Amino acid sequence: MMNDRTRSPRRLKRYKPLLWQLAAHLGLETFPEEIVGVDVFLPFMEKARAEGAVIFLKMDGERTRPDDAGQYMALLTHRERTEEIFRMDCDSLEDALAYVFVEYAERHWGFAPDED
Image 1: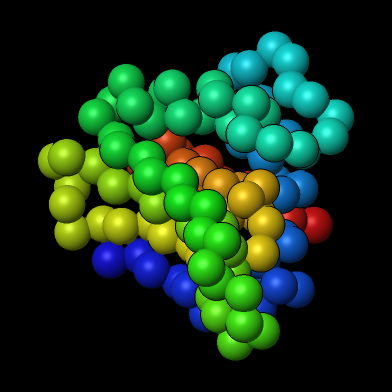
Image 2: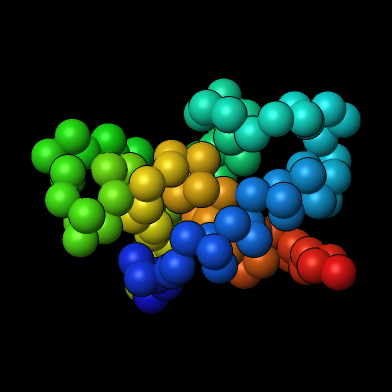
């Protein structure tokens, strides 16, 4: 099970820059220059959904204390691989989504990012 709720914000930031590589890997002809909002992730969501994945997004306004895990949660799981759960709780919806899709893609879409 992948559940990395303790990722530091600095380590979490490595995932968003990998989205352009992931888009190219999946053959997407266009991908936005700026990663803002949920729409950017729709091609990834639709591909995962078509393969049987379930995606949950949570926006939790009750998480207001500094020691809370963050007001946003993204979770991706698959009906046939229920032992795998890709989840991230953090202060940015985009960072949470970037994490779950890059991790999922590395395991299920043959994605091997170049992080040089």
